[in-house]
Length: 306
Image (cartoon, rainbow, N blue to C red):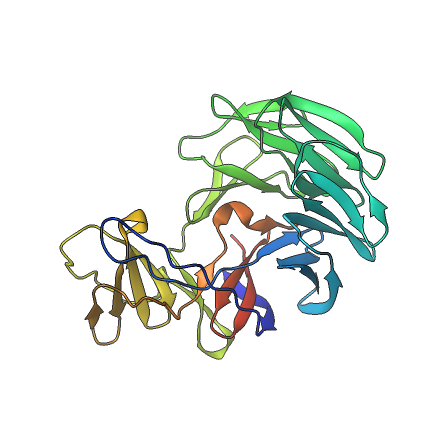
C-alpha cells in the first residue's frame, strides 16, 4: 500500500542538463529533496539552506541552517552535517570527527564515521562505539539497536549475525520495532525478517501522484512497451506518461500511455514526478517507508507499507 502523507507546494529544484558524447544531453527533471526522519516518523526535509520540519502529516515550520549535507531534527533545533563538520542549530558546535551521516533512536542522535573504522558517536557528548571495519552502513532503531550488512551476506543486529536469504540484497535503510530490517536496492526496497528471510519486496518503477489523492506506480497502469530499437528502462513519471531512460547514453524516450504516442528522443525537460533514490528512503518504528516525490507543483511525501 502507498499513501500520500504530506505536501510542500512550490519547492522545485531542477537537475542540470547533462552533456553526452553519444548524442543530445539527458533530459532535465525535478530533483527530489532528502527526507530525514527519527523513528517516530517526524523529522526534516533538507531543501538548500533550510530545513522544513515535518510533524505528523504537516510541514510545521522552517529552520535556517546554511549548507546541510545531512540533518536530523533534535528538540527545537537540529544537528547539521556540513562536509565532515558537525554542528547543532541554533546553539553550538558538535564533536570533531570524519563524520559522514546522522542517525537517531527515540531519544538520541548519532553521528557516523566510516573511516578508518565504522564508529557511532552519541550526541552531544561524542561518546564513541566502534562497530566494525571501515565502510559499514549502520542503521539504528527506536530502542537503540544497531544493524548493518556484513561481508558475506550476513545481517548483524547488535552483534548477532544471521545469513540473508537469496535475493535479500541492498544498503540498510532502517530497522523497525519488530526487528525487521529494510534494504534499499536500485529503485525499491526489501524488508527482511529477524532470521534473514524476506518479508516483502517492492520495486515500483516510478511513483506518481494520482487522481483523488491516490498514488500510482508502473504496476497500476496498462502499458505495453513499444519497440524503440534499443534497450531502455521504463519508469512511470505521470499518470499518463512512461519514460524509457538510457542513463549515460543520453536522452530517453517518452510515451503517452493513453494514445501510444512516442517522443524520441524525449524532450529536453521532463515535467513528470521523480522519487528520491531508494537508499535515502526513511523507515519509521512501525515499518512505514517514507520518501519524497518532486514534481512541477512541489514535493509530496508518500509512505509505503508492506
